[in-house]
Length: 194
Image 1: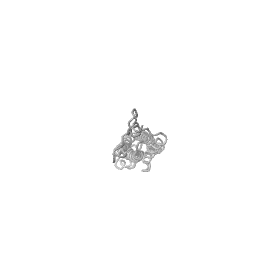
Image 2 (image 1 turned 135 degrees about the horizontal axis):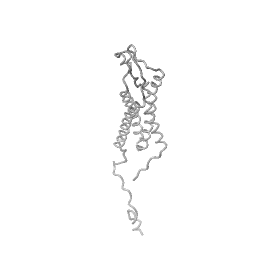
Image 3 (image 1 turned 180 degrees about the vertical axis):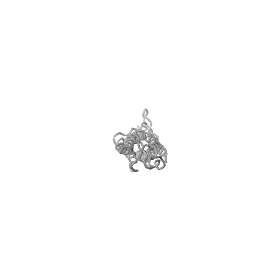
Image 4 (image 1 turned 120 degrees about the horizontal axis):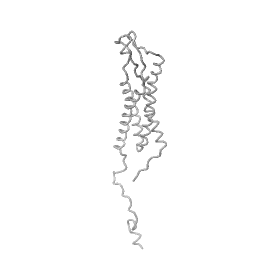
């Protein structure tokens, strides 16, 4: 009977105990994976931001105008005013939709290192908004007031795409954060498969 009490090890048929981690091999966060995750989010936002610049410019249509005494004037003020507001409006709409979708996708796909994803969405959103602005403005017609200085009277020129202020660039990262927060707060974390 005493032989049974002093035996070390698991009883016959019992599963083996899990191996102890080696000293110094304590659970460390996977920094490389987190940095790669952040880089993927930032690059994804940047690529979509450039694409959104093309979409923004395609949704907007210029107002016609003409040169009189080296100054460009819209042919119809009734058409020119909505066009001026439409440039800013389309920028905000496209930014909000794309930012929210990308933020939600980042939250759903990369939920292991939430702080890295949060910072990546902010940085990526700002970069996306800047690229969207630059691509859209680059593809729009040139500034008609600048061209009018050397153009003859009666020359017809379209208006150019404008963004009314730098503060509107916050729409993209703001919507990204909203999408990210929605997913992180409403979708349960994935269970690690072992």
